[in-house]
Image 1 (tube, rainbow, N blue to C red):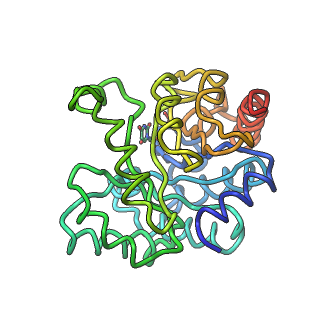
Image 2 (cartoon, rainbow, N blue to C red; image 1 turned 60 degrees about the horizontal axis):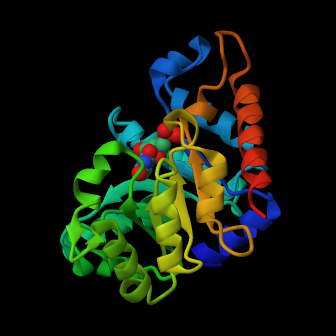
Length: 273
Ligand SMILES: O=c1ccn([C@@H]2O[C@H](COP(=O)(O)O)[C@@H](O)[C@H]2O)c(=O)[nH]1
């Protein structure tokens, strides 16, 4: 099954557009886990088990692992996801982008080392920088378009021939790069007007939408702007608000994560149709 089919099946199976982000920050872990050598694996597995029936995707952010030299723990978590929840897409958030030969290594890292169903990439280096990903036609390529951070406007809002740059990216991906139907775009929940513009340009192509939860994006405005005609089309990501939902030391962090994931999933669903 390719990435898009797997994602569609997960939307239906879990009645969910919620993507649970895995951004493990040791400083925010419960005390009893902090000193364990595999603390990140234990923490992420507990979050995954607590939310797997509420999520349409999981998105580990590679920086949280690489910064600690904990790629082995990321491998273990990806293996656990593939073996235990093979029906839920695994998105590696790595925001890669480089010349073709190097991009080929990034693709191998995402799809072979970590076994990801999809990877995030930057469009900045153009067509030849995404060419290697076509060698894995069953995997997804998710291109940064209108990111959720304020500084994204520095470049993404530049006027290029009367059209903002992010809209050129949306058109380029929809009309040229998506020849295998394996592409999706990143558009932040913090910019619902731009989300609506992108949806108009790309038809039913899926969107990865970070920015609800800790970044304060408006769920109702996000869903209304980005949903497709059948009320799907989005992986709405929340990381910290779910991972660190426990209000105090000693509270069951996985149960708290489940409560917030359920509330977020249900809030999203209120505006889908
Ligand atoms: O435009 C973007 C692209 C990626 N991200 C990533 O999503 C999560 C958001 O985490 P929260 O804790 O829910 O804010 C994080 O991994 C970012 O690197 C993004 O925020 N915006």
